[in-house]
Amino acid sequence: MSHDHLKSILGLTCEERYDYFLSKVGEEKEIWILVNEDRQFLKIYSEDEQFEYLPVWPESDFALEYSKDAEDLSPKNISLPEFFKKWIPGLKKDGLEIGVFPGLDSDVWITPPSDLHNDLQDELSAF
Image (cartoon, rainbow, N blue to C red):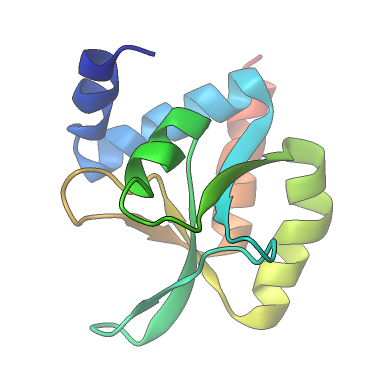
């Protein structure tokens, strides 16, 4: 992906990035997260709202761009079936929200796992 294209997508509003995420994940059937050297996934604590969330991206290039200043993080893909079967129940159990496609601004679309699951299922039904 070209750097200009990457920046233009990252510069979209939070809602536009959410829609892009749903469309891209619907096509590719995978979600990207960041993991450290111990294979532990990145979760972010929001001090303002006092909750934790798992940031997710539609493509590895976006996750790489987000983590460019962190030496020990690397993108890892999760197939959509695995995300539905293992991650959604696990995130619910752990009380984690999902931060969909953080961009250049500090805004991120925060959603409960069940809502993202439903939105992705709706997107998949369009294919």
